[in-house]
Amino acid sequence: MDKATSILNGKFIFKALPDGGIDRTKAICIYCKSVFSFHRSTSSLKYHLAAKHTADAESPPPPSNLKQTTLGGVARRPLDVSTTCQLSTELAKWVSTSCRPISIVEDEGLRNIIRIASGDYTYALPCRTTTTTKMHDLYEGERAKVAEAVAQTSTVALTGDYWTSLGNHSYLGVTAHYFDSKWVLKSHVLTVMKTEERHLANTVAEHFMKVAQEWDIENKVSTLTTDSARNMIAASRELPFEHMPCAAHLLQRAITVTLNNSPFDGVLAKCRKVVGHFKHSPPNAAELEQQQVAHGLPKDALTQDVSTRWNSTLEMVRSVLKNKEPLKNTLALHTTKVTMPTPAEMDKLQKLEAVLEPCRYITELLGGEKYVSSSVVLPALSHLYNAMQVSEDDPAYLAKFKEALMNDLDQRKDKTNMEWLKVATALDPRFKDLKSLNKADRAGVWRSITALLRGISPAQPEQPTTSEPPKKRLALMFAESSTDDEEDTIETCLARYRAEPTIDLEACPLEWWSNHEGAHSLMARLARKYLATPATSVPCERLFSLSGHIVQKKRASLLAENVNRLVCLSDWLSPESPKKT
Image (cartoon, rainbow, N blue to C red; front, side, top):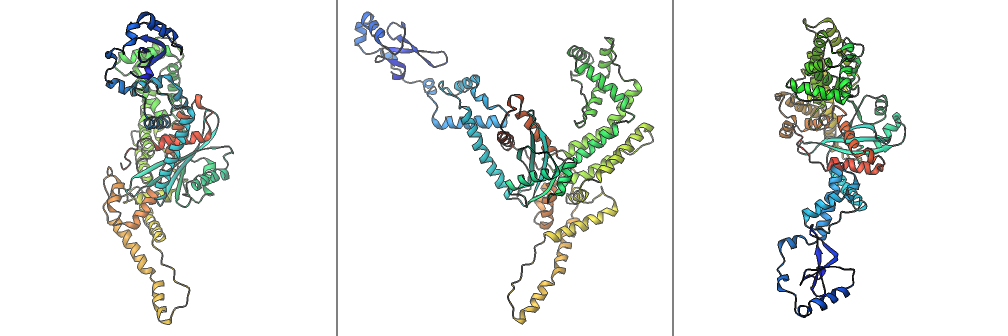
């Protein structure tokens, strides 16, 4: 008989609870099954034995109570220390990666689930302090792994942007991008750092340098990709890094500006009123859903365009065109000031959809961080220019819109880092024929690459300053004049790379470089530097989306260092998908 569950030498046992626990305030007689209140005094229990079970009390307890321990009984034993510690660590990981509040460790429902799953009904969740400590330990461990990985690469590209939380606090987010030894493109969050100062150019530059110094990569950073805000552009002039303006921002800004005061203004205003009529009224939305079902369409909500949300105008136009009949029938049920676009205006919307679709494709293409994007910018823009060619079937208003969009994009494209993009395009085996450039510009790209190769070619060892015998001066002179051979080697290296055939557009350029690095070692060093650069600052946009899930209304008062740890851990501990695609 277990002493922990019995008293008076096993003649009374504590009452068992349905969940497997025991109630130590109730004692049950093993002879007559009577239940007694127990408050640490056995006087009443002894009186019961003397009065009712005198003969039985002198004999040992019934043998039926001396059963062998069952598997269920074993399962209910308390968890050992190592298992409890492992559970605490996994809880800290769960809180970090799933954006859960730390207060969840005080949730009774979670505690009961773990008790049932483990069979230990005495298990207690770790407190907030323990969970926070575990998270800090996890952060330091994962940070050391990321720092070691970054230390092993020769060049790192950064993206950066500022974000304001619900608590009206400003944070700087920075991500790092590089190739590992197997040509796998890696991306890591470096920091989400709280900032107090105004975002002036010199302050912004100091913030980025501080992050680079904290990670010991200030001599490895090749580029910094940001949006085209004036303070970012001015800050880039004070930094020793190449600046890469976000290509997607440039394209979306050109679309937004061209749509203003365009021939599509009137019909877009009508669409916004129609969408708002159903967005702001649940009964109207319910009637629209009924009409969607009647027309065999899915019950999809309409999309409202937002000036700062990329491609939202295209999504609004699509939703209106797709639900043309349901919208028309629903609006006819009531007398409202909201009117559907006319057939001529619906035709305008269809033409606008056809124009904006290539822009959406390019935005999504350039916004990836799991594949090479900087080398795709110029071919993508070349495709867009071809798609925007005015045809004979285009009405005058559409031709005017296309020309205005391309003119605005031309002006913005000149502000980007064209030299970097040209070299990146040449280093991509899919586009190294440079068909996206004018023939006059192609020779200049290869001259630039030749100059870059001279800069990274192995330098001649320094000669000792001590005096040498006269017979060695001739050899020294020949050593100093060996630059012609070196130039020949660089020219041969470049010619060998240019002689390689271009690969299919669907092929992976990183796999090609992984297989050909030995044959083109100097070119591969350039490729690692130029192809790792993201063409957009979308990685930071995704980072701020994650930050928004963490810094919720109930967690708006999170300490800045905890925000940084939670965001970084959520990125570092999340399962990593293959990036050589």
